Length: 102
Image (cartoon, rainbow, N blue to C red; front, side, top):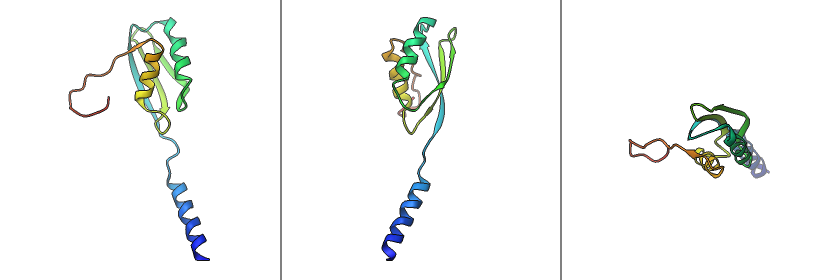
């Protein structure tokens, strides 16, 4: 009888300890961004779970898009790839510290 109770307690503890969301913000710089690129980028980002579609904030003159995303569902690299799939070139920061990532 103790075994099922122990298993249930362990499962409950594991479920409570799991992270369900990790909302982050990222600003993506894009070369040559124009108003006509916006629908294609929005459409491509809409294919992915985790991108908070209502958080898209465009700065067309500066060529930047700031958005929120759930890092438990999508990585920044996927966001950048989605934008490039829409035909807009993303500016990747130059790595100077010798570590992986952007």
